[in-house]
Amino acid sequence: MTALDRLRLSWFLVRLDYHIADLPRRRRREIRRELGTDTRDAARDIGVPGAVADLGRPRVLAEDCIRAEGRPLPHYTRGAVWAAVSLAAYMYLVMSYSFGLADGAIAASTDLEGGLVGTEVAALAAEADSLIAVELSYSPWILLLPAAAFVLAGRLWRLLPPWRDRPGPRQP
Image (cartoon, rainbow, N blue to C red):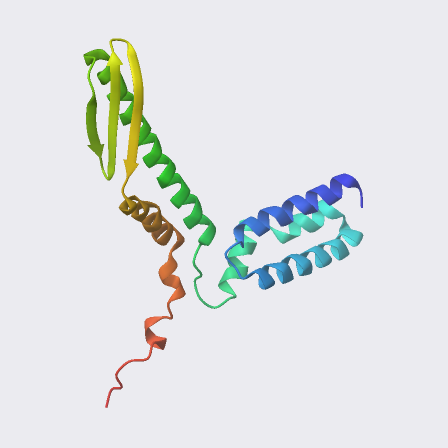
């Protein structure tokens, strides 16, 4: 196998691994090992490009692997990404507000205070055209935003057993 063939196979497995990231680690390792071995065996007969093409698209193959697990799984990776994005977007919003408040404090040559959804901002101006400091204080409730994004985007309710399998009152 040439270096390009190894790269082609590795790239396919990396793309597959991305799509099956929500499977348990042991199962992911088994799938990668099995597919790598089978593809190398097929590559001896038809070549790596043909063997990789026979596997199809990594996303479709990953969906089949996940479907074989028997129930929908949560998407931890997607949840973590959306939690980080929501926190970054909130921080960007707070910093934009802080810069605006600081500009207002400089223009008015006075101290200004304001609040923005769980955050207190104070801009302290000394004299015209100079700013001493901008103070930020956050409420711990702000962490609910990324937590909610993690739960919703990660579909964590899939950790719960299906309704039909839950223990409950017995019907007579």
